Length: 254
Image 1 (tube, rainbow, N blue to C red):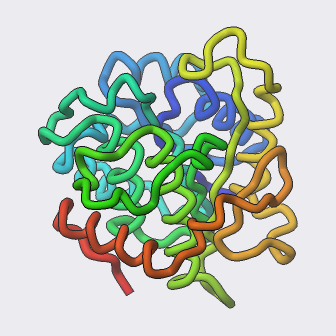
Image 2: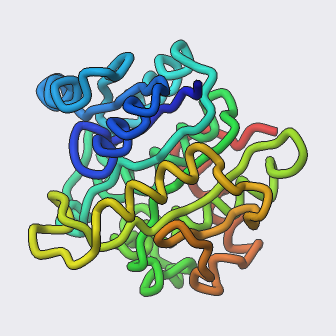
């Protein structure tokens, strides 16, 4: 059986994906922002092996989470599911950075760089990335990042790390739009089926059909789709990685 680590898995798609994987006999490590949410995560998915606690708006806690998570590895896949919405774009997190930027963009970058490489990395994006900006035209990445920008960053991270690590014996790196589904972020009136999002998460985590996937591919409803064209700009991918390395103090490993 396989082993997985899912960030932001106290509720919503992360929790549902964890429950699906546990029901299939796999081992899952959950993650929650604080102790209260950790208790909720454990109650929702009692078959999980452990729940790790870290506030991803904190650079120090994110670094510590990477080390702690590796103690439970190695992993078949890490799903970078944690995310916040636009209302957190100007709310400072524990390290003083905007919470949206820290959680949606910086944390998945840091965890990717600091953790031992799994077989697959799954970055949770959104079709909102189609409105995102890869080049903020002079604005600082930290202060200028919107929700749409952060979701474009997630697509670009999958592509950037795929360029470095994909190939025979390498790491499969992918991004996914799970749909506009009825979670806390999506709201009760969301029109898409949450099961389709879970299906796609599980497919990518298990690598079902991976031989036919494009390295760095973007998936919607279990099918590969074409993301915003600018996501394929190698110069902008490298610029994003360089800026995130400077902000976090965490370099991209070989």
